[in-house]
Amino acid sequence: MDGTEGSTGQPGPAERSHRSSVSSVGAREVQLKPKHQPYKLGRQWPELLLRFTSAPDDDVAMDEPFLQFRRNVFFPKRRELQIRDEEVLRLLYEEAKGNVLAARYPCDVEDCEALGALVCRVQLGPYQPGQPAACALREKLDSFLPAHLCKRGQGLFAALRGRGTRAGPGEQGLLNAYRQVQEVGSDGGCEAALGTHYRAYLFKCHELPFYGCAFFHGEVDKPAQGFLHRGGRKPVSVAISLEGVHVIDSREKHVLLGLRFQELSWDHTSPEEEEPILWLEFDGDSEGTPVNKLLKIYSKQAELMSSLIEYCIELSQVAEPAGPQDSATGPPSDPSSSPAPVQRPKLRRQGSVVSSRIQHLSTIDYVEDGKGIRRVKPKRTTSFFSRQLSLGQGSYTVVQPSDSLEQG
Image 1 (cartoon, one colour):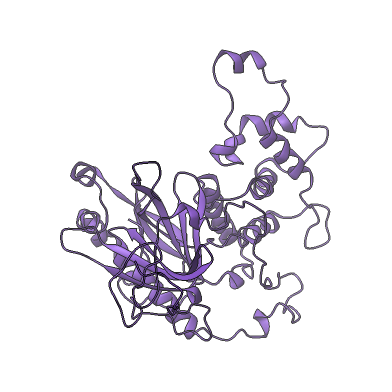
Image 2: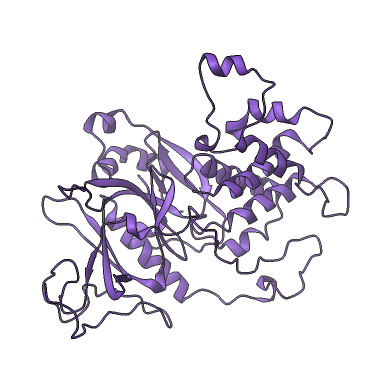
């Protein structure tokens, strides 16, 4: 069960980079508050699974939770790179690496190769031109790249090729990136300490908009296709962080929708005898006409997601101002410590896996008074939601109807 500290109450101050998390083999997890007692939570685990998941009764009866040490969802990324304890950096690195290899963090091939090269450096040491690095990479390729990037031929043909064959595209790109890993240490030495590579890995992960998110499971409607307009649903992961919400296709491993909190309104409903729904409302267009779009996310964790969104917004409203030590332009307090990173630009690659694919979603398009563009909605005098973000000057606005719109 994916959950976070903001799901049922207010957490303590986000001063620590890690908190305990209870997980199970079914990828259901909940981040604990300081007041939680793991033993008592373990006793209540079947009740939590029945309430917040759609797991069959047999799976609930057999499921056993285990305790993990995980990154605190509310820990700011700008402070993460100020950590100097190598063991804490290693814990953050190991968790991020696991999420990348499991494709929980969708990455473009170029980013996977850059991140995999840093893993090579940590596990294999500095690149040595005279050593058979290609063979070492090939034997442990799934330790450096996500599974979908290191699929190789199987069976007799693969056996006949042998180990001396030419490296595949993923292997070659990884090898090239491995050669380019910088080896200058913070003290000016010729070989960097592992902490330097841990920090470099985390800094690269910070470019991913969903790094450090809390993940939830759900389903969304597929767009109608074919003559019979068959749709159905697709499984998704909903990633919620201090900055916004991302809906990720669980099978295709790419982002379907990414929204900052300033760009959305939200609510959750629990219809009787129906699955709970998290509603996201955001600006869009339909054949060039501005509309408001509604996305339905079916999930028993809709209430948890709604609570976390609300709490993240509250945190951003009362966020402490950045001090001199948090400024990327000010001089660092210690020459050996890394300065806080500047704001990273959004990835601009065409077809990037982190770019939204709204066309792969089935949304409800409407204007405020119910004049449907594609679907007719009940007449409303106000927005569907009462919980619209009131943070500064957000870019979300309710679309007003125009005389040129055709009535449904």
